[in-house]
Every structure is written in structure tokens, then in C-alpha cells.
Length: 294
Image (cartoon, rainbow, N blue to C red; front, side, top):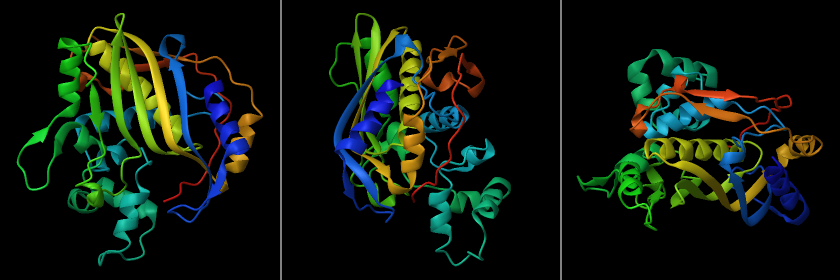
């Protein structure tokens, strides 16, 4: 995808060195936007292989409103493991378990998973159960927004927000992709994401594919075609230990985009299953590994 490589070039050419919470160090650029026409193909990177299985399972996990990593662990998705593990290492029950041993306990011990697999009120909670501390009332933002798309598609209020200031301190990681807005025009559904912070090597490829897929799913249950996915990033950054990986991708010529087929006749956003998604004509370069900054 040329759009992604252009982002990488912009950061390398115009970004500034910036310290960060993880003490890894970044090259950072503030305020960047990409646009993907979803009719032209599914925006999954071809300059490296992207782990689509993890993207689909994470998105289904968000949609369910789940905030415990057990579902992800049970489906061999590892992208959230470091944060609860880090919290576990500071508990009285920690006995020098490795990350792998921690994950195995999450998988096999229900009580342990309930206690140490919880991430707090992260994305799924805010999408489906946005609430005010101490109140019994909550808002199912995703359900309400989809209903509004069906009944009032010209609305400019088709918004889901993950950034709940009253709950930030209770989250394992404050939302990076913090707000998204749908837009309906000429029978097509578009989506714009505002992402406050974007790890360009590890996170951004996932985010592009995830929100493109969400747009396709919502379009299907609303009987609409697909338009654009617009990705707006606040602090777009490349970690200092990912420069080699980024430069390797810049040396590769992007290949044709794959196509995503969604099987079934879903009418509700909760009807989708992992088996409903089929990616065809995906021919990426080899995968590239990089450490996650926690």
C-alpha cells in the first residue's frame, strides 16, 4: 500500500526525535491522514505479511464488549498479553513466571484468568457499555450508531468514542484509536478513525485492516456498499528499534491488494463469526518481526 509507505517516508524525512512513555525513543510526526477506497481492495499490507487471524479475533472481541484476554489467548492471539502480564509481575502472587507461563495459566485456570486477564474498561467496554462511574446507566454506542445509520443515515452524529476520561486510569492501556465516525453517501458507508497515537510498524497496519473490516461489517448489516476508510493519526511514530524493519519495507514494491469476502447473511453486528471471513489473492512479502514497546 503506497499510502502506508508514504506515511513512513514522511516520518523519516520530516519527523522529530521524541522521548516516550516506554523509554524506547521514537521519530514522531504530528497530524497525518491516509485514505483507502475499500472498493479497490482490502487494505492489508503487502510489504510484509500481516497476521489477519489476530485482527479478526480482536475485532470480534471488541464487538462482544469483552475486556478479558482469555478469549484472545484461547484463539492464540498474543497482541494484548504483555499489559496484564506486566501488572501480574507486580502482584504478590508473582513467582517469576515467564510471559509464556502466565499465558498458559490464563488458558487453563478460569479463576486466574478472571483475576489477571482483565484489562479494565478498554475498547469493548466503551463501545458497548460506555458509562459514568457510579451510575447504573450506560450507552451501547455501537448498537445505537448502527441503528442510526439504518434510520437516519444523513446524521453527522454517527460516532463511537473509546476515550472515556473517567475510566482512563482503570485501563491497562488508554485507547490509541480513540474515536471513529461513519458517513453515508450515495448508498455507501465510509468511516474515519481518529487515532491519538500510532505505532507505525506494529500497530498501524493492524488498525487500518481492523477498521476497514469493521466498516465492511457495518455496511453489510445496514445493506450499504462500502466507500472510504479515512485514517487520521495524531502522534504517528516509528520506534527507534523498528527503523531497520521500516526501511526494509520501503525497499519493497507494494503488490496488488487482496479482497475480503464476508460469507453469510448477517443482519446484526453480533452475528459474525471468525469463519465468515475469507481473504483471497493475498500475496505479501515475508513477515518482519519487531519488539512491542510496553
